[in-house]
Length: 241
Image (tube, rainbow, N blue to C red; front, top):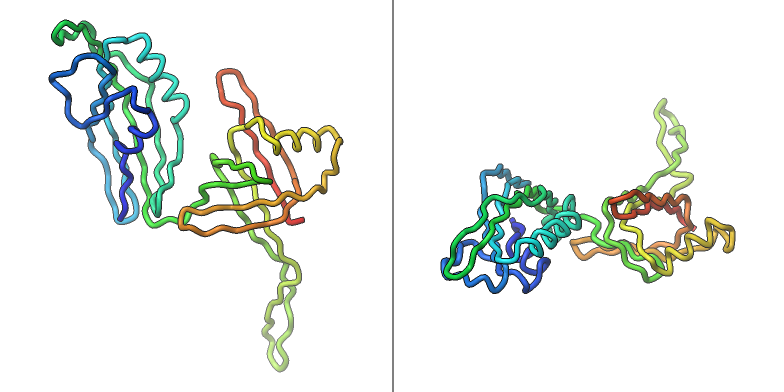
């Protein structure tokens, strides 16, 4: 069972401007904000783990740090992280100011708290990336569907039937953050009739277990969702060309 290392992920994600630890640095000098992680109660089974992490952020620059934390939560709340055979969903509550005027040497510090909820599943094969014409997307959700049309065939000498596939096909649909890319430009051109809607796209679906599937597909539908105070997203569906 390969458990998700939240501390390493946070260090890589939040960058070197923050000090990340599981123990408070009592000699903290206020040079950069300190993050202290505390694992809270959770639930563990053979196939999954759910737990919470209390994230204490101690800082001498509260206004700047609060802005950073709020942006972090907006960006990574409801995010899926896939590593090897483990898939983890991350959920974050907004930062709360817990203490003011904490005396530490010559510094007066402030403490914020963020509560993270993590849900990991083990041994999964999951889609990690979809590439369309060379443009890579990390899907927020994805569905790869194989369907067939069946024709029953009578079995000689019995009242039973066997079945034969007469038609088969694969469809792909996913939602992702809308990017200003070459693919996005082609979508705009298809919507406005500037290029043929039957234009094929080379699509590569990558999985966390190392597997890949490559298809030539045409666009079936595309929905752009844009709302105030939310990241623009796009939902697209493809069928085999």
